[in-house]
Image 1 (cartoon, rainbow, N blue to C red):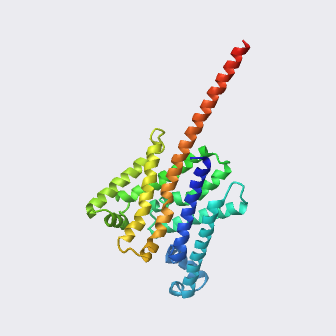
Image 2: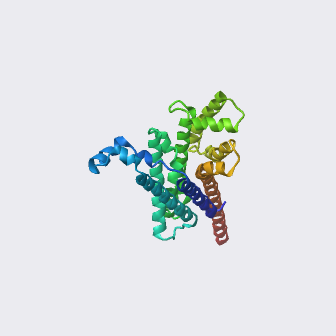
Length: 305
């Protein structure tokens, strides 16, 4: 795979992340209210500064409509960022890079809000590192003049952190095993609930192992291939599980956005794998050229002698 195609993988990953989140924000919901309706946090401001009772604040329809409009505007911005992701280049105008950077910050904020809505489970935040990290890595690629070698560590870090966080949930000991993990397993696989939990525990252990092996030179490639495969499988599981209830456009519409933005969990490990392959070929080519140059130099010296 050429360098151009590898860079396109990074772009398409950002596209799927932004378009999936745009889909979510424009047609469904986002956890903005977990912050804006946090009584303990905001009641001193709402009641103390604006002199509005908390009950009036949270039941005000105009206020709720405002929140929903902000969510939709956020979705529209994500949609714009998705388009920018596909066409942005190192030579693109600075405004496009700034917009992509802001898009990354909004994804970071979204991860914080999701963490808050899940009782501040830190794994919830870090499970999204691939999603909020990808735009920044794409921008970093432009900063380092397309030097793919400098992307390896950042890519491996966000992959490892995401897989460890997913594994923490899957083993069900540090945090409670998410009910939707079990539900998806039962919907897709012909297994009992106990067996589903055992399979998830095994998958969680494998997540930990992969997070380590991608940093070991001899095992990094096979670990990244597994990570790419598992990332795609877990992304598809959302929509496949949903369609087991009813095969309809409405069901597809309800679950599709989750699959779209999670597709990056497979693309990013695959992109990292292809970078390793590309750099290895470049290294071999450079060594071959050096050998030929040395051989030609020796032949010239022999002729002069």
